[in-house]
Length: 220
Image (cartoon, rainbow, N blue to C red; front, side, top):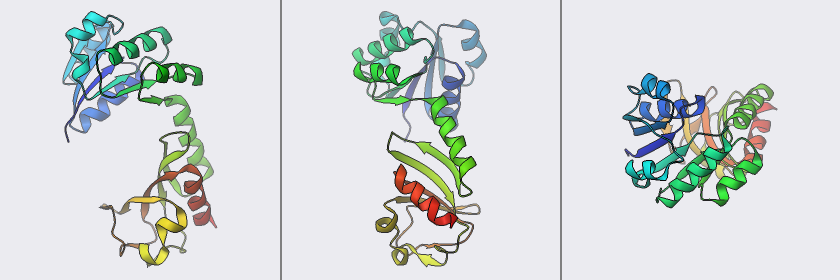
């Protein structure tokens, strides 16, 4: 479903968010007070505006409160990050995602109204570490302190040739199997009679400890 996004700050993180959203066919408003950045990326997004996100009148003129999602990508400038989050909240933004540099910064953003806090550098470090430490995990995304979305390749024959019912997958591993990718084919929300074959990639979501348990089982 098409949604509207306002991304404040066109640093590396903000630009990456814009590119991913546009690639997914979403409407994106990019906001930055750097004219050079706006000029460089204006053709990438639906609309690009030179504005100071700490200026409440300017944000009101842009109707920031009407967007489905507002992404505050101003992590390094903590004052601007906090003020922008506060203004977006007061203008009625439905869902605010804010980038944080530290745990304390993240706590402050949450207290003033951010719905979701992201730590891009920390999360990327975790993803790289997971991939280095595991032969099975292809991708790893921490959704919170306790929940993870992961892509795990099946090379171990413990699971192969059996249906999800036979494996008692959900109950045994405590994970929701979102999709099975086999070559170029992807089966989303696989039924109970779906089988797992060697070489499949499983997209699973659940508690981090359960993801690690499945990874450990497949590494034996």
